[in-house]
Image 1 (cartoon, rainbow, N blue to C red):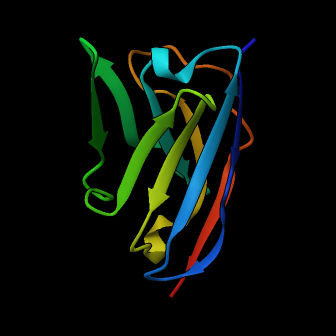
Image 2: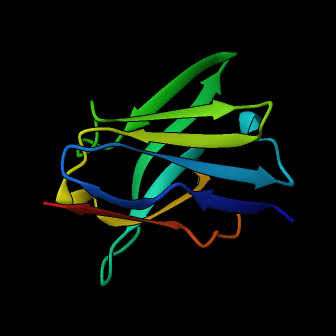
Length: 119
């Protein structure tokens, strides 16, 4: 059974930074395409960023809303996925989750980590 545990959220002022972590057990994050998602009350969960590899070459994709501000990375030794968030805006306020980010299959969702950006 794969388990995902997100952490690193908090309260930050607009323009600030946070680094989120997603520790995985039961599956190597470097062997699959992993991503970050976020959800606000009353809205569907939305995709934010993904990291994968094709033919041994790493790649990353970002939603337009976070491009240039967020950076996703993976540490195979720690089996952890990170999301560095810079230039945070109040509209980035959400619960952030990590999970598979290719195809329709998803691991069981973790509890997420709350990010709150004050103006």
